[in-house]
Image (cartoon, rainbow, N blue to C red; front, side, top):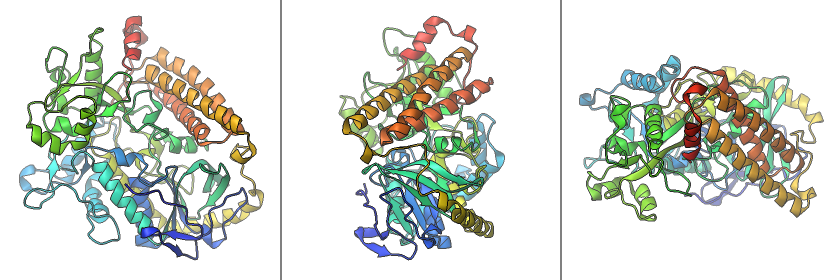
Length: 590
């Protein structure tokens, strides 16, 4: 894992900790007054450090020589959701016997997406994906990343099969593909002389003037002081999804996946779409009083079987493809089976029929986690339950990542490109980040992007005189507050976050009802109002996080309530179909 990057005070952070002077760089502001010189504004701002943000930054800097500033809340660039992807990334199987092609991949995506995918987005990913993988992840030079994916004995790339894929086309590195990709692509970004990184910094709001996004307002996690960052080239929101707003999630603990990008956009009335399609992963390890741990799709691709407490395989009761059916189908199957028994767990993942040595070599991260809990892939049937996993919708964009607000782009899980429709196909997420993150940079570097830069520069000059003090809605910073007040605000923020997560799980979960969604909307409105007030009076990491999370939660609940058609990851049933006992069972799935 990368070590935490310190902030370059007057230049760009390079490999080995060397700071290179650059005419466009400037000191990171530690007060509320503007610190940018005019030339320093001529840059692209990227919010987030994962695959999508890094792809946008690298293509902008390397291909178009555009200065980039990446801003992220973690202490290191690898502190992002991309890091935790287990399974792999879609490539192309060039073996003629596989029958793989762009058209075949497109069919798989459409089938998994419940017929709701945008055909142009699917075509773009299917056709451009392999070349973007070669460019950004298989590049032997130091311009981009050179990721050591697993290879066969003959040196060829190893490609595996995952659920709902018609051919083995998944590049992987054991069961920690996201980790190895993130390490290498963030290292490539860190060593590029035109890319500056600002860690431990929370983006709290967008700066908008005359319907044009010209920058972001930030909060330094260490000092609690606010600042403004301007970028003539545009602002890219790429800080991940919102599945962390659920009580049970496969996303890492802490403040990841709380919907920060969606919240930033929503507060400026930027169009968001398909937020009701929150994907629940079918197989999260279910151990009482523990956070859910992802058991990758690749396990089922390698032959794992879903069984009930009596050992009966049940997946084919729900779909002819059994364990390899689309995720939404398998998630509901596991959910329904788990409700059939009230005295014991009733859904297990079983791969004990495979060779023990092979299993431990193929899935070392999972086995390490299991060993610490007295379990073994080769010996035990693993108790599983669905958990919130991925945001299929998000900030609505076109194929270049443009949003409804000029100067604002989105990429990765933060964006709704239309690729996933109602349900994401396994291992599309990392590839989507590469393809659409790079497309943002291609647009920013185009002639039209240059025109956008000139328009933004004019607006920044006009906006600056009135912006010496941040107007993010936060009237205070930590330096002016008593320590006890800060501590109390942080405690209250965590209480609100727990309440939010429970409400989302109980009423906006795997199965939803109109009555439950109305209950959620009422409860979330109250939580959101308090969270907004809390952040306004005490701006901290915790209060900023819960403000974003409640904004995102409200948006998901409202979107779900507005869509009465069950499809993909959005399953809504009539109130009459869910009696009180089943209501209790849904809540008990925690």
